[in-house]
Image (cartoon, rainbow, N blue to C red):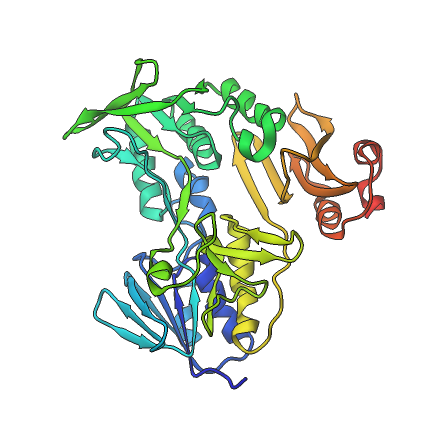
Length: 407
């Protein structure tokens, strides 16, 4: 395979920026175009719901220094949105009137917050959290608010609740699940997060639906629950998940998976010649799991972006990394590695749930499918080895043995 003359990367988040940088690190000397709809240079998302929203930082973690793109001869176009891909002509068109031919194409368009499909769901004054500008606006709103209602008790909703409490707002979180994060961690571990937030003054309305956002042209007044009760609020945050930005790929005729992502093989290639996808939109056939996996976390975008560079330059290496994410809420910090099946995996807890110092394992057929350390920081390498190495272990060993010895 001859070296491509021009590689276009659509999407200048962590995945796209990592791909562009890795191409240069591998010695690629052709043209690299990095197109980003966001007006800012590429940044990482975790700080938006943590340090920035808390008020501990005014800037996110930038992927690279501002001068990096010029020094690496990466043509970076912020605030420019790709509007159409013509696969046959190998052409990307943008909203500034540009036409960009490519030899290889990487789609890294990320996700957007899901809306709440209820009356009032489009009222002015509703907040979502995805971009740096979103985070700065929401931080200002928290600082001025007396009452905040957050719709959704997932990761973003939970971190937003912690930030709003730091700004001294009264916070209520509404979610249809009986326990926060139950669909990710199960009810036992999710209960640890519920108790943490309750201890820090958050009110929960769990097992309840929001049926209306109340208010008018001047902004929101609150939310109405399924039983008719209205919760008054100065600020309403909608945190009901994210949807992959696949409109561009779909219009171009690329195959989408059942969960809405762009279908890619083990090497992150789509079925279209010389077209790849990484990050939130990539429904990746993962050799470890024998099925498609789509992950919306920081590490996945970073690692897939770096990985795809070698395949753009002629290799065909599968992406094998297990999912990873982390969160910080109040005095709780944790890391999660792997991919649990909550319906079938056995939960094994090492340590004390009540003190919020423990490691949770999900065990499947004698192998650790996922591990989550909470306020325990000494065993990270061992946990990665257990998840990646598929060592045979028992629940008793996970509870009592030296973890490094099990790897």
